[in-house]
Image 1 (cartoon, rainbow, N blue to C red):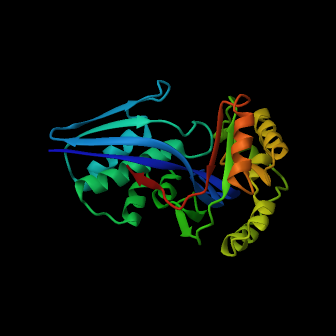
Image 2: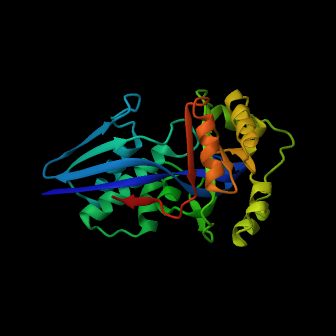
Length: 290
């Protein structure tokens, strides 16, 4: 047996992100509008006879052992399917780490999706999401893709009407943000100003980009002290963005633009100022088989 597949796995942004509570198990509950974007990691997966999982990555900073979500996704799929085989995974990283863009979760989702195709198990997307949620709260959405409302810890997903292709620029500096510390700071807020999720849902329903831009909000921005975030937001707005908002718990920031040319010029002008700069757009598809 020798089967191979290559695919691109999309990153995500949070068009809005609210923290609504904390469960007894210390997981926080969310209410967020998730969106896949055209920033991709590339996976090449090969199945051969034998046993074991081999993971290689072009980024030496990325671990290639059991701590990697792509590796754990392969393990989880084999266990769920009751299979034994040798899986070789080649990972090329483009989604920045520590960005709030779901890079590791995108890789895990891609492994589950690819193995489902290669083994012809034909698990449904909801079945794959049940495997994925045990790996990470973002994995179910990154198996679904498009535009969706995420509730619970991120695993309760409601697909929304697809947005038109919206031009974006995403920036990230070198600073990182501790997610546990960010949640702890949110817990300490006495009177948090929550995003208007209902207004966001209306904006998506009517494809009203002006209304969407007015309501792109992230509660984590109330507690972040990361200077790269404020610097990125200022730079995006100065270069023509309609709005600029941090995604996830940070530290990447996305700006929404009226047209792709303005976004391209912005990215070109800022490419020396940030560690990660990319003009991209919203996309309906979580994966592209190549």
